[in-house]
Figure 1 (cartoon, rainbow, N blue to C red):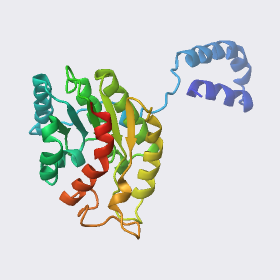
Figure 2: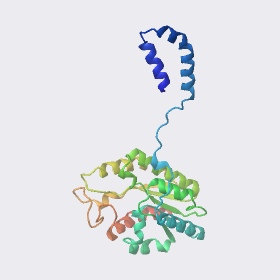
Figure 3: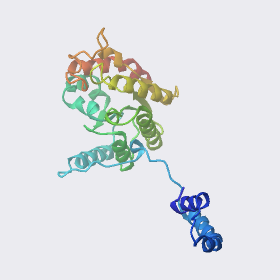
Length: 261
C-alpha cells in the first residue's frame, strides 16, 4: 500500500484527540482525493526479473570475452558449420582436455565449438542476440548451459534461462535440431549441487518435443557405486578429463547419428 494511503487509513483508525480534529474532518474529503490520485499514479510492484533470462555481456578490463564472441561471429560468417557445440567451460574444454576425442569424432563432421568458460544462460542469450548464430544452419546444435547459474540460483530460475536459450536458438536456426544435454554432475555428493542439478535436469527434460529438440542425460556415467563423481572422469568435480570427454562422446554418438542427416 502506498505511504499516503497507509497514512489515511491510520488517521481513520486512530483519529487525533485534540482541537485540530474538527479542522481535519473538514479537510478529509480533500485528503482522500489526494490519496486516491497518489494510489493511481503509484506503479504496481513488479516481480524481480530472473537474471538467467536477461541477456548480458561479460565485460573485463582486457575484453577477452568480447574478443572470443567476435571470433565466433566471424567463424559463423564463414559458414560450413554442420555441427555446433554451444555452452560454457565444459564445452569450451573440448579444445584442451577433450581435443583428442574432438578430433576423432567431430572435426570430420565440420563441427564448431562456441563454448566460453564461465558463461551463464544470460551470457549465451546475449551472444545469440549479437550474431553468433546469424546465417548458419547446422544440422544439429549441441547445447549444454546452466551449471554456472546453479552457483547462486534455484533450479526453476536456471531452467527458465535454459528454456529461453533453447527458444532463441530455435528462432535463429529453425531448421537445426537441438540436442539439449543435461547438466553434468558437479561437486561433492553431500553438497547442495547434486539435488539442485537433478531438479534442473528434471525441468528442462520437458523441453524435448520428439522432433526438433532431443534431451539427453548421461550424468550417471560419471558417478561411482557410492554416487560420488569418479575423480578420473572429473578431477575438479566439474570439468571432464580426457576420459570424461570420451564418456560424453560415447554416450552421445548414437543419438547424434540419428539426428544428423
